[in-house]
Length: 551
Image (cartoon, rainbow, N blue to C red):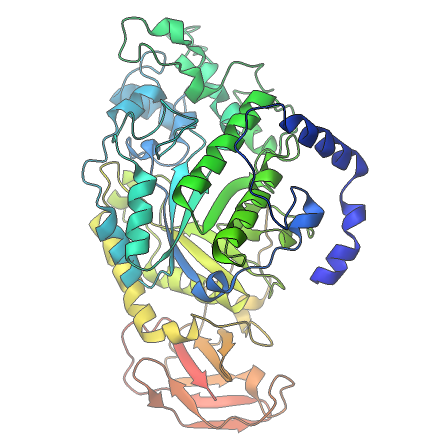
């Protein structure tokens, strides 16, 4: 839907009851201790935020790399460890009990204490990512585990400067990114701790520890004589409230992600703390991008804190830079919401050219480091990453790629090799990626048939048929069209049907075709049914996707 039509329907899209509730909330804000919201043209409501325009730096960058690194990487057992370890009988529970002990005695707070990150070298990692072709870098600021990875004013005890590595990780990452000339972003996931940690207050149903509560309901008074004496575990676990429905059901949290289906609703104190933590993060580290792992904005629709954070970030950007240079990512957006931020699709891709810039986020392994994938050599290949990047860029999108970091702060040699290979491919073909825009069509070929639909946050990744030499993806800039052949043809012959003499997409006949990388000028024939050309006889390295510059 085009922006003008979206704005025309805006009044119908936002219920009046929602506006009145937000107005009451705004009036009450003045009576609470909140970080000031930057003033400017943006107000904390959907109608005002539709004035957002994606800045050119983001549209031109195309490729970012993400360090999704925090204390859940310490066990090296994959994503959502701090929730799964409290689900009796789950793989994470069994692993935790074997490695650390029963979760009633050794909870996630103790995992945090164990985490050191002793070999973390942000400058070396970000330097490697720049060589791989990344134009922006994103670091995890907190996850659903509610532990801040920076010198947090509002999560003052449970942050990485006070325990674990005892370092300001966001400060280290941001300085490294800017030293290497990359735009810097942070990802914020902590809004869901309220429900996500619900498993930490359960207990075993069977066995020798049946009925013994896990540590998720411990209070500060329970810490006398322990390593955490004087700390309040509830500042981490946030479980001083009624339990969500079906807390022991692993599927329930996904159904409750938008704060429905029996979810416990966060109170005002929790929402205010999240607002303050996030505004403090923005003010202290000045990120170009904030990625929210939420449906629309954090805590929406039970709170307006996400709207206020967005208005603050946009107004602050304008005040500091003279124009809007800030980007916010959100998920599962309706047409109005897509005009207020950049839509992020998790582990998936759109099946069409989107009218507004968007992003896909994916990972070469699991979001938090999982050693099993290394041992089984199960990472995404550089080829898969490159194919994803090309497909996304052809449809007006960016790719944000997570490279999992080990608990000690390093990446393993398999990951290093994948990142290096991506960089080698980008060095040859990046001209057709950076600063481009979609062409008249995004592509052609059998890979476009029966494309897998998006589901929830995305999740159609890997569900389409593999690319063949007949699959082509297009980008354009500066009067040239870049055609990416998504596999090397055995006979060296390529036919691009969308560029035939009778094609409605061409305004003039083709004069020159060049193979990026070697710069070879290729022989071709343009007939009514397509552009026919012959590739060099010697198949080059990294030929799983080659770029043709067509003038």
